Length: 106
Image 1 (cartoon, rainbow, N blue to C red):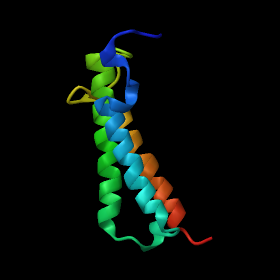
Image 2 (cartoon, rainbow, N blue to C red):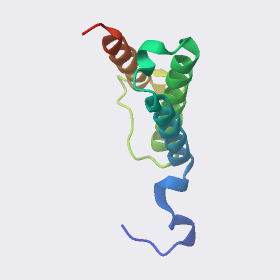
Image 3 (tube, one colour):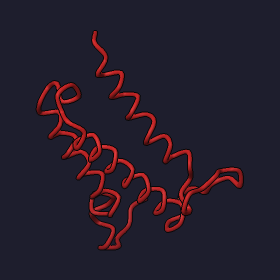
Image 4 (spheres, helix red, strand yellow):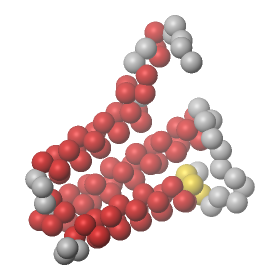
């Protein structure tokens, strides 16, 4: 939906969630500069990778559920601090499995 509101001109990129996403993508691009970062990096980049993703998940869920009401949780959704447990687990499990599978010898 188009709007003439000047505060909405820049869209999602300049929103807090958009800026976090751009920062995450910049760090991910940095890791991808070296072809084999999964095999050669120490624990710190992995912690940064997980931490940024988790931070984005928390911010995105909070904004979309509690601020702009884009979606809502079912009454059966367990929450942690008002954030759905499933999105938090999804961010922790999927990247962890992905990196573990990438580290396996071919």
